[in-house]
Length: 130
Image (cartoon, rainbow, N blue to C red; front, side, top):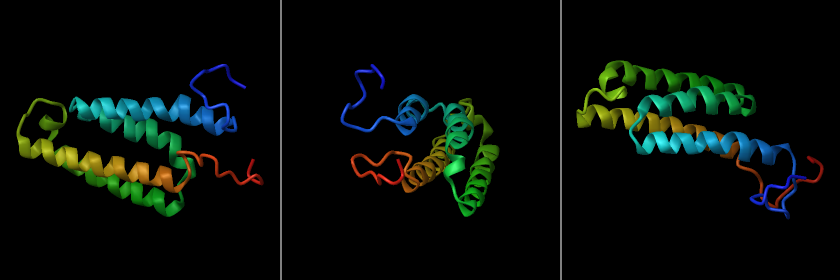
């Protein structure tokens, strides 16, 4: 058991809790911070390198193909507006297109995380799983 005061002592402690708190939470917070500061390269890198790398093993084969298609779609937009992506162009239309593409990617990843139980189950545990 951990001495971390932030952990709920009524929750079963296992690797899923460590995974969520120590690995996924910092990545999600970094994505949020990059997004709030319009740091598109940081958002993209955290989602495609850090977050996807930590959840891909939970995805179904069809999900992996869908991810590749979505990533390709986002890359086409980034390649069309590279200056806006790196912060050298302040054209509102270019920025909005990039924001929309990155938001679609983030929403897809979070939906798949929820669908595959990566946000945890709270108190609804299947005791046969544990």
